[in-house]
Amino acid sequence: MDETARLGDLSTPSAAVPTRADGPHWGVFGVLCLAYFVTTTGEQMLSPLFPTVSDDLGLSVTQGGIAFAVLTGSIAITNLFGGAGLRRFAPVTLVRCACIAGVGGSVVNGVANTYATLLIGQALLGVAAGLFFPAGLQGVSAAAGPAKRGFAMGIYGVAFSVGLTAAAALGALGAGVGWRTPFWIAAALFVAAGLTTVRANLGPRSTSEGGPVPWRLVLSLPTYVGIVLAVLQYGAIPFLTTYAVDEWGITAAAAATVLIVGRLISIAAKVIGGASADRIGAKASARRTALVLAATGLAWVLLPGNLATYAIAAIFAGTVSSLGPVANILAVERFGQNGMALGLYRSIQIALGAAASALVGVAAGVVGLRPTLAVAALVPLALIWICRD
Image (cartoon, rainbow, N blue to C red; front, side, top):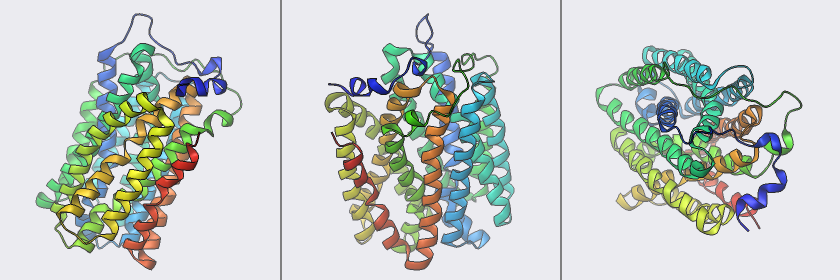
């Protein structure tokens, strides 16, 4: 029995995803992929830049953890507004608001001279990502139609990976020309993404009615898989470049390069993960991914710094994001038409990612970054139980 059939008992008529009767609209799909790429680049910008930013502003690892947590906490909160907003506003309105917030956050970070200002910028970048996600996920599904939904979701995931790669590349650039320049580039990207929506029709507002919060739908397999992804994506990987500089003794530019390689690997990992899910089922694919993540996660943290260890760290960083398309497809199948459910789905996982960011930063300040990340590397093993048959 395939995964969709297993999930059928949790589906409701209102959870059916709206589609366009006249077939896929790839122009609309392209606009949404561009916006996803840009919001991802903005939200992930501080991570590869943090070694340079911390030197300039005199920040500690613990303060870095709090800064990452402010970003993810802001995403979690505004995911709720973005999901609820789909009942009142067309998706294009939310995408435009996200672009405006992204411009503001990038500019604030670009001029930041204090830690407090940096936190404000992080919060605004979180607003951009949070407002965009429910509208983007619903819009992609509608634009592609049911026949192309799996393909579209995979390519949409690649847009996320390209955004991660761009952030890492801009981090390497920032190590050479100054960390403020990448934030100004991000601001320009947000402007460009906003301009592409001027003539775009991203679909109508959600047709789901108000009512009780759909906890039964949301607190299910898609969210649990997404939580593991978020804890690693926002709680562990943001510290990879800091770890590389502090523990391996390499330069900030070299550390960013390791992350760039990881982000490039994530593109292939999404394709492989999607093909694996089609072949053996999403649950089995997630369990296999968990074993790879736990093994590579422990290896790059515990082994001494050398080329092999750098490669293992890149594989870990790349493999993490392959969980995203699996979680998103499951979410669309279960509650894709319900904007509030989509917002809650993302909000819950990102909120726990925010908690993980703060916890890793605080724990690293107490016991050190190496043992803290070693514990974080064991988190993927939870998928073996979560995705059990």
